[in-house]
Amino acid sequence: MGLAYLHVMDFNITAGEEAVVFHVASRVQDGFSLTDDDLAEELGEEVRPLLQSLLGKGWLVVAEDRELALSTIARHVVSSRRDAEGPQA
Image (cartoon, rainbow, N blue to C red; front, side, top):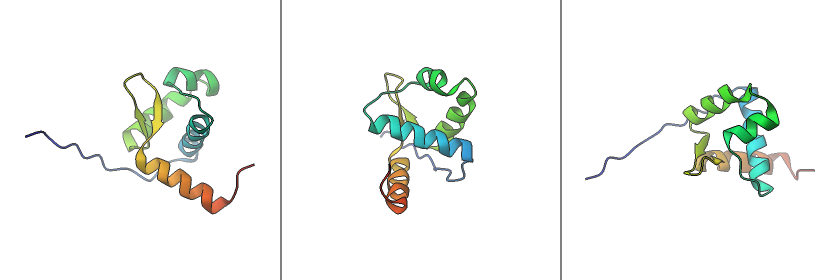
């Protein structure tokens, strides 16, 4: 039998981490695929510890090609938050 892997999502994120989550969500929604290097180029090297923290907390996942994506739960949270805030400009 295979082993199941359960990762508990940590919903306690900092304002900086939240900004990164929404930045990744926006870029992915616009059709871009991003790696950690792409984000570091866009936002500066100081984003790397935030990415590591978000990966550890279950907000971001990494695909085989190193592309960053929001986890399923993070996508739902971002979508719900945008719905609550109304249309984005």
